[in-house]
Length: 81
Image (cartoon, rainbow, N blue to C red; front, side, top):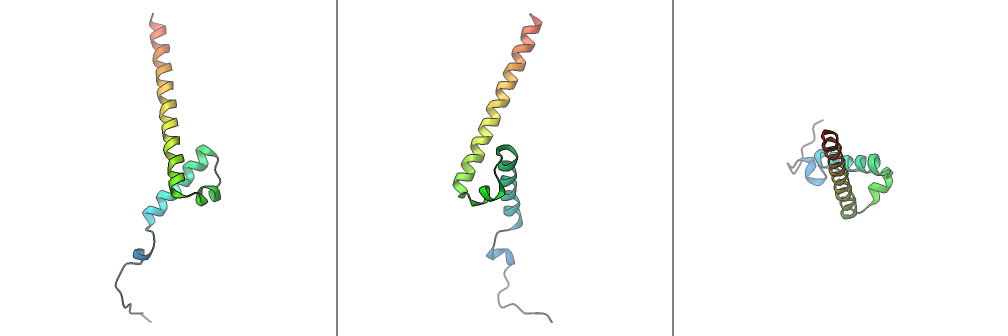
């Protein structure tokens, strides 16, 4: 039996769409992989704090990559002399 709905809105209108949920789970994965957070710890963090930790992790990784590149360039220039 087919049910006729009174309102013709998409189901996602009343909830979060799958793209948003996937992005949140990606944030949880990053926090687990790089920071050792548990799923429940990341899930229970307020969004603003979770985003701060993710942005800080991004800054840290960029700084580490820059330091590694600088060290590599120094060692290359030291070999040529």
